[in-house]
Length: 437
Image (cartoon, rainbow, N blue to C red):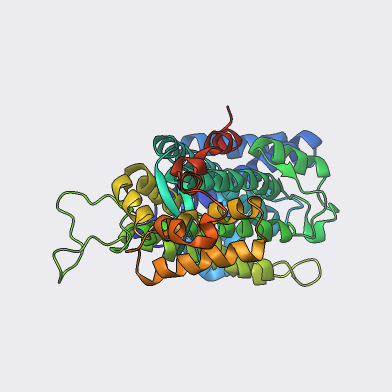
């Protein structure tokens, strides 16, 4: 985790003290249920909670010092709690194994992280929707292969992003549900030394589902799916960021990141206004995606468990969620303050002499009786003259002067095919599909 790209609420989930707090809650809830079952004295759970209510501070340094000797983090924690609580603490962890604590804690952390990320997506979706409605009918050029294709609107571009992040949100809701499971099943997951009702009880208290069958660890296909979902969201962030970066190029300049008073773009060139935020987002997306492959590789553990996954998850859990949280918030800011230049969009639309209307003429010629091949040939030979003139010539005027074209279509019929509004007749329907009525 790099503080530069972290926000407090998400970072707090992964702090050592928070981790130990969740550990304590798992142990105390389990001890409560064991007391109810008569496996341990009922006073044991009460002693834990009484201490907790009066001494909420976790001494991370003291636990670390014990771990330096024991070389085992859960044992170090249990030893430290026992020092604070006294004899009743010996009833903690009855029939449990370390993975019961560690895996259930990771589930809690990832679920909480998901809640923040879902809220981030909601904020991003709201910003995209507002700007899409603002530019619903703002004409701009659509590009394929980076080349002018046909007209679209900037609102449709933003609607595409809205639909994409709506899917991202739906996937994350599913991923959260899949990751939020509790395992309190003991060594190799057989419940030999702990009753399954303890797992039920702890799961309910922590807001988790029970893991139907654990092999001492929660199966890592759940985690693989979760981090893959984060990776896809990161890719969607990069797609939008890349679009903004292209639109901010000097030769295009249809939109650009907000440039605040006093901001500097270059240490050497005072004129520069660089797309630094979206370039940053492109890099952060790569970091989030880097968690996906290790998460996939964690699925194949040995037999009922090993700990090859553990070191990986200590990295990717915090890094992926903290980075994605920051990236989503940053993208929301970019969209919210994005500077949009409709005049430049129109200028770019017009700069290639009407080439963007070539398909309409092609279709009209086929409807006038020409073969598709002949229609394509006639339009293309005139279009290439416009292309090679860098837009200095007019496709409409060349077509009017072409005897083969004029034999099939009148001048007024040709002019009708160069009507920009024609391309936007389905905008309302697209918006209804994306945003609802």
